[in-house]
Amino acid sequence: MRIGVIADTHGLLRPEVLAIFANVDHILHAGDIGGEDVIAALRDVAPVTFVAGNNDDADGTDVVRVTVRDCRVLLTHILPRPHEPAGRVVESLRAEPADFVIFGHSHLPHNEVIGGVCYFNPASAGPRRFDYPVSVGIIEGGRAQHVALDHRSVTALQSRMNQLR
Image (cartoon, rainbow, N blue to C red; front, side, top):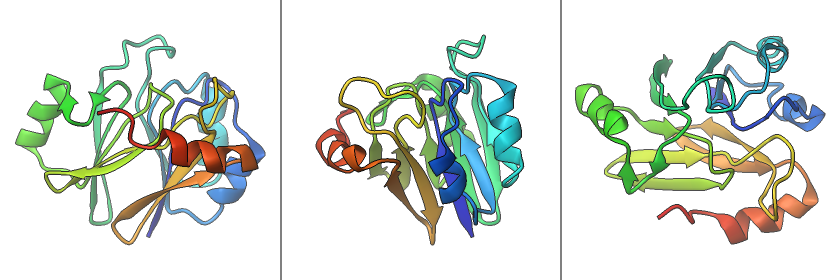
């Protein structure tokens, strides 16, 4: 089972994303989508579960739960930090465990296991911001990894990883 993970597209769906997600079983979008056309294009690839972000006429604090085969996911837009998640996230995890907490908003890549839960931010797949990477994620075999969408983002993923402490 392969799950594609994307966030912060802000209305831009790069062709590289569609190529990387070509063989995924499910796609998770962690908010700041930027229009239904992005979700529609992703649905042409695989089933999509998404949460609205603060730029999607929402406040970015919703929590959506999904289980894809045996992978339990909590999806939110604004976490804000893995070591200090928002109360709503902590409460949801107490009520129902998750294997992954997927989030967006910061445009910063994150991949860290805390208390047996993988906190994963794929970074932004939309318009480039500062020197941040443009990337998505893949969950496979119980592990998450980042996939850079361009050469410049390879180095940016390394330099910007796990800064949300």
